Image 1 (tube, one colour):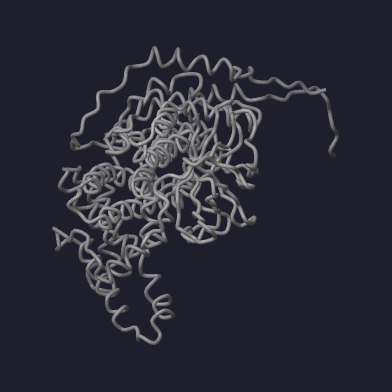
Image 2 (tube, helix red, strand yellow):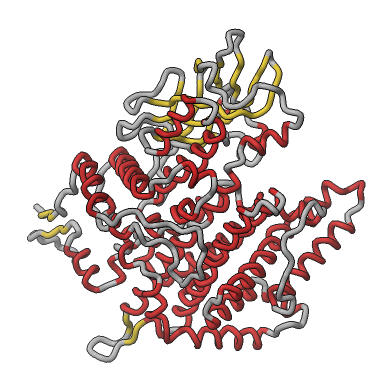
Length: 597
């Protein structure tokens, strides 16, 4: 009979809960936050959560069930919430503290815990805040949300209404006595994805977006405060159907429906008058989506950092060659160097652009559409960077990169989720490009018109305008969809890469890293540059190789500047970690014999 040597059991969750207070008490105090945005280096994101990362609750998961995994994420979320200590002023005024929470390196330890926090603060607290001054009940609820005494969700999209959420079907009906009934009329109208089941004994509420029905007439979208559970069982009339596991994210995502749920007269937020414009009312009610688009997109920074660091350190450690002879690190090969060095160049420009977009987004001298445009551009560019670089680095780690314990595949899955959260990147890019081409507003124009990226942007803008101008009025809808819509995202990316380059230049980013970032952005659309006679394939290869050659000797230095040591648990980064990992694996041995031939 085989012998199985198991790893020691993990600490029970009840013990981990107790360790939150102990760990937070011994960790460093809250960082003193400043409203100043200083010139960043590669790692200029708050590292104040480093002490938290060493606590037992943030060790790699050893839970045995989904229920335990969910509970651990909620415990971690509460610990992070205590650490950040966000106030309503931080959320309403979009303080540096608010944005730093969304690009903290500890995010990669538990993506689900961070998602809970972001929704709790940005979407729920941000939606409740305007009503708190006029209602003590709302103020009390807001306090409970901020302190995580309750878990709060934001329910907008439905199974049948994602991109067209303005057509959602969930109804909140005004009754003759001033109370309300919340109802899901059919399966396709069920709210999709936000968690709703009881977890960790924490009461759960949600801000549910529903159309207000008054005497059978649609009065437009309204936020509705609804109790989902007391932490132990669901509230009457509320049904939560747990969705299967989402790879890389431990959260109890669900399909939620309401069966004639009775609500008080104060459950619907705001006035009950019919809006003059249903469209304007829709965007007003979901106003917190815009800062969420900007904030959630910054998750790309820690995601790209962790994958770059792990892949870089692994590439320096892993060697190839004949046994008992000189072996060389796999980083010596150009094919191994390219994705890592390009990612380092991207990281060098991401933080200054994020800081600049925050500054622009908060600048009320810009029209609201322009401010939202900055968020859309950042999201489109950051996601493109991550979606290009991370899968390549996963491949460069071989089979090792596919295992969750090496922290790479979780980051890969996270960027896919981020691409569609708080506004699908493709859809919001289409809307921005259409409105720009129709002349509804303008984004800041190029300041370095002679650079390659500015020329590309100008060329795409002219092509887009030529397409729009050439479409006959009688075929406008069909041809607009066929000819123009596919050009929208490339146009937004063109604007974005030019803006990123200019911002990095002004911020004093390392010239070698900036040159490689420019080469990487050009490489995305090299055919355009060759078509216009600005580059040949040979001249581009020389351009890229010069930039790579300048950075390659500095790899270890640049990796260390990321300051990821406190957050990395991937065994493949160090020989000692890998040896310990192997020794801790379940081991099967035996003494039997089995004849094959």
